Image (tube, rainbow, N blue to C red):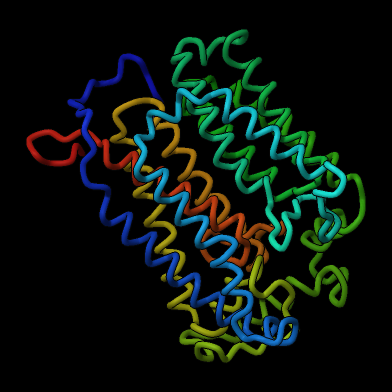
Length: 386
């Protein structure tokens, strides 16, 4: 998987073929299932807060679905190789959007984090878009400098650490611990795949751990979440309440679930039922087999993304596909791990499923880009190269 200049040269084509139909079908299925899961999990909250059973899912479509489908169409239609020429644009967009949350009158604080920007009746979370914009910039830069420069200190490691420190530092200032982890893993993985030495990737890990330590040592609910993760019985009616209710929801679903729309936990017992905790509601209503099927579907998409990366015709496409696979895979794992008690609460949405217009739009944009890369996979004798 790691890029080498002396890797085997495959036959390539400049034209655009058909996308990976299996990947397209899996993404479409996940998107539709996500809307059904959101409609069910958010119904009680939506009715008590807004007087409509479907207010949350309708807002999800307006703020994330429609913009996301437009972005999907854009990234699916435009040759992905064109985006590499826009390096300065992606750099400015990445850093500029993260700075918007600190602008008085635009930035909005929620749950102790300044991660949101108010745009009239709509709100946006710039850090979600940064997962994609930072990935495009880094992939283009690494593809341009090549394998040997990526392994050097002056032309590879130092600029990479400077960019990464700027991005992660702005996220840490919000602070958004979950997004910081996801972005750090995306950037580190792509850098490693480009040919960087493992020692260099370890340098990024040190930077990320330092920022993570700063956030955790700041006190407040983040420190409490870590303590509760280490000792679940420490505060069962306070910080530990969320995890206990999530486990109760998953366990009460059994093999076949209570039935669609019949969750008990969504009635103001489990916090964030339509966002971070939506997997627990899916498991409660639909049971083990459907919840496991959802995990299999996510795994299938990630594996197909890695296949696209393997067969991509150039380093830029390979780095993008690897980054998207890492993004969706690590974030899905972390979200589900939190719900079953394998990781401390982080506040990350489940890709394509959880409420969050910014997250859904970014996921759909990334899906369009990934499918665009699959349209350029080289063919030999009419068959996709294996």
